[in-house]
Every structure is written in structure tokens, then in C-alpha cells.
Image (cartoon, rainbow, N blue to C red; front, side, top):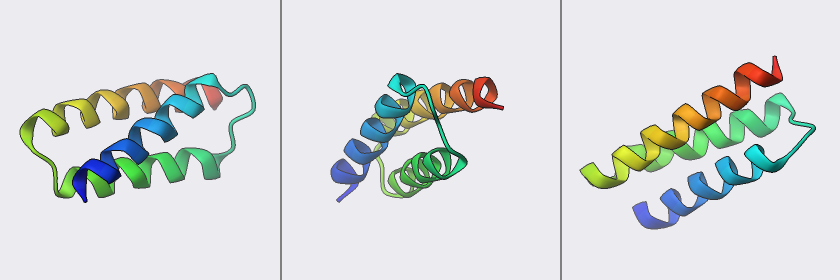
Length: 64
């Protein structure tokens, strides 16, 4: 299950980085996916999720 959630978090983050028009709903969905994946992750997966969170924060700050 954690791997599927990790993949969702990765895909949401990847898609947001490629979009020009990003809604707050898009950002919230990505944050939720990262949060959900984090709960049941290994240490290595948590490191990846932290990276995705940083990338998402950068997208979010540019979107503001």
C-alpha cells in the first residue's frame, strides 16, 4: 500500500512541476498524497517524500 501511495505522491508532484496553470486544489491533492504516503513509509521512502514536499513547496511559492 505504501508503494502505491508513494507512486501517487511522485506523480502528483511531477505533474505539478510540468503544469503552467496550477490551482490550489492541485497543490492540496499533492500535499494529501505526500501526507498519506508518509504514514506507512520506510526511511528511504520518507526521504523521497521529503524531497517531493520540498519540490511541492517550491511550486507552491512560485504559484502564489
